[in-house]
Structures are given as C-alpha cells and as structure tokens.
Length: 547
Image 1: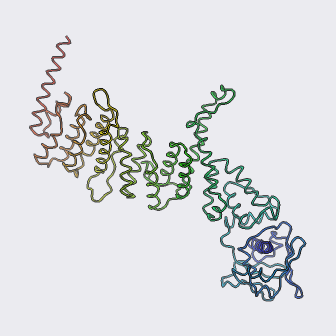
Image 2: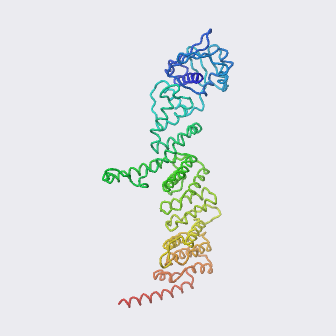
Image 3: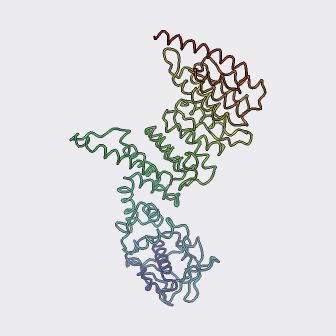
C-alpha cells in the first residue's frame, strides 16, 4: 500500500508538469500534497486524503536501494507514519535507479528527461509513463477522479478506465465508490444492456487486450451480444403476448420498423471488430444455437464490409480492420465453411460475390470446391449476370471463367441425377428447365469471345440432358452468335457446333430464320427446311380442322 501511495503522488506531480512544464505543483493546481526535505530528517511525504491508490509501474521513479537508503524515507498516510524497510526498497528498485544530488533528483536510465517537476525547491527529473491502460487520456481521467473532479463514464471510456483502475488497484479497500466499482456498475447496468454498446466496448479491449482478458471483459461483451441479438429481430421470434392485443396490433408496424432499424444499426458495427474477435463471436453464437439466419446475416454483413468486391457496388473496403489479403482470405474461408446451402436470392448473389473475390485472393482448393458446390445446389435461382465471372488466371485466355461455370453446372446435375430435385408427372424438373434456359443464355453471352475454342463451347452445350430444353431456340441463338464470331472455323468444326441443335425443337419462327442463315452448314439447313415444312403442314391442318 505504501508503495502505491508513493507511486501515485509522484505521477500526479508528473501530470501537473504536463499541464505547466517547469512550473510548481501549486501553479498546476493538480496536486495538494507537499514534499519536504530537511537535512536532519528523512524525506517525508504527506498524502492528501483523496489519494488512495496507485500502481507498481511508476514506483520506478523512486526506486533504488542505494539512492533511497542514502536519504532515508518515511511515509505519512492519513496520519500514520511507517518506515520503509530495505526489502520493500529493494522491491521498488527493480525498474530503474534514482540518484539524489543536492536539491535535484535524477533518474539514471540514460534517457533524456521528459519533464521536470519542482516541489518546494526540490527538482524531480522524470520520464513519461509507458504501457498505462487507455493511454494518456485514461491517466488524465484517473488523476481527475482522484482529486474529486466529476468523471462521466461512456461506452468508449468505461473499459479503458476499468483496466486502469485494475492496474492501479483502485478498490473499495482504499476508498468507497472507487474507480473499479464505478466502472463495473456502469459496464454492467448500461454497456451490456445494448448490442451496439457491447460491440463498441468489445472493440475498446483491443488496446489493453491482456488486462481486459484477465478481467473477462471481452467474454462478458460477447455473452451480452449473444443473449440480446435474437430479441433485436422481431421477425425471427414472433411478437410478444401482452394484455391489450389491440395495442400490439396497432403498433406492430412501428415496432417492426424500429426492430429492423436496431438490427441494421448493430450489424453495421460488426466490421469494427478484428477478425479473431469476430470469429469468437460467431463461434459463441453457433454454440448457443442462435438462429442460422441470424448467424449467416452477421457473416454476410461482416464480409461485405471487410472484403472489397463482394458486391458490384463496393469495390473498396469501408472502415475495416482487415488490411491484408491473408486476413481477407481467412475471413472468406470462414464464411464459406459456415454458410448453409439455403435457397434465397440474396444468398445466391452473395455466393457469387464470394466466388469473384475467391478467384482474386486465391483461396485453397478445398474451399473453392465447397463454394462451387453451395452455388450448384441453388443454380436454378441464379441470374445470368451472376454467371459472368471474369477470368483472373493467366492460363485462361477467355474473358469469362468458363471452367468454373462448368464445375458449378456439374454439381447441379449430380444433385439432379441423385433424385434430390423434384419432377412433375411427365418426369420433367422445373429446376432443370430453368437451368437449361440459364445455360443457353450463358452460352449466348460467351459465344462472342474469340478465344473460346469450339471444344469448350460444345462440351458445355451438350452437358445438359435432353429434358432440360423444351425448345432449342436459346441454343440456336448461341450457335448463331458463335459461328458469326468464329468465321474462320473449319467445315468440320462448323458441322460439330451446328450438330448440337435438335431441329425438331426449334419453333416455326426459329426454323424460318435458320433456313436463311448462311452461317449454318448445308446439312443443318436441309434439316431445318424439312422440319419447317412439317410444322407448316401441322399448322395448316390445325387451321382447317378449326374451321
């Protein structure tokens, strides 16, 4: 305790010197204690009643067995005088030495003096404190608190001040309503009641991680978030029952908007967390059996904020803590492994956003396969522009990553063949037909790429089963675009590309266009004319029967 008192007195003097360098303590107005040195008496320090605690780190400013033993020390605290033993002096001397010469006290660290404090003619040559929890702002607040200045706690300051109080040992043993108890009360009764405040408090632990972990502050913040998060989303858990159901009914719309706003606001703040802390939060959410929808929303929100390029509108990262590709890759792989194969339009677009970024960040093959399988499970709900994934590999000369789309299509077809996709009475699958239209549209888009070789185009076109296309109009359009963009193809290649068409599945309008298409081989044109004539006869026969 004596060492604590001595430490705080010297450091409050240091604060005074910061306010008014080279001035006296009285002029600074921060210290009410006095230091007296008489040749015939030991150095005496009378502590003000407000000063109750301190810490070991700045005991270094007073600390050498030889130096202190030379002058002798007696400490008067609240009227009680105690002699400091040699053992205590030895403990105080473990950081640096102090040399007393005449009326001046020097610290023998070899470093330049930061501040000089004069107290009753005694000059103290001191250095700045390093490693104080919360830094200079927290120390200044602690000094004000010790001298009765009213201190307002906030979400951004409560954690640093709680750590500083622990660092200085500011417990009830020395003073009622001391800093530790005040900070604890505010933390428990205010900060942990709000998800947003808990997130900001969790973020404020970063600077003083070691002492914060020792006090379980990050864990308490995470527990509070996990406990409160479900209640912030009324849509997930229904509406509470209460007396006067008409009131609930009338205010339901207002409450829903407010709940949605609250949820959006704290989700936006997730990105302030570092990746290790965010991973702890998601792990705790999962272990606590929170809604999968809520967990996935957190993952998607954090990834969108921290990894640029997931959405086409965000090419740059916002205020993110993830600054390296390694961290972004780690987050990407974490998100991929935690997303469930649900079927929503929002998640489909998000998955393709992940896929675009995955090609840039070069995630591991296992996670690439996992992501492509997740997309394959919901390929029937994908839009065409999502499939247009740019090719980032120098080995691939095509404009778009056709190989990736082939793998995704293969995953979908495997699932279809396993019987996981529903079919109608005729054995047709609505999902398969939708994917057929999607792939034909994709083939039309990539057909104009001059670097797309005939074999790759052909392979994707024939990979779909026959039942995937009710009509071949979309495929015909893709073939026509490809032949136009690759006019140098050999006759054999033109025959092969045109041979993927089933002329019986072309509508009359498509047959009419194909019959006049000079880019088609003669053999294909003859087939088109034959089936066109047959369709015309059926149309005429149907008209005659109707009349």
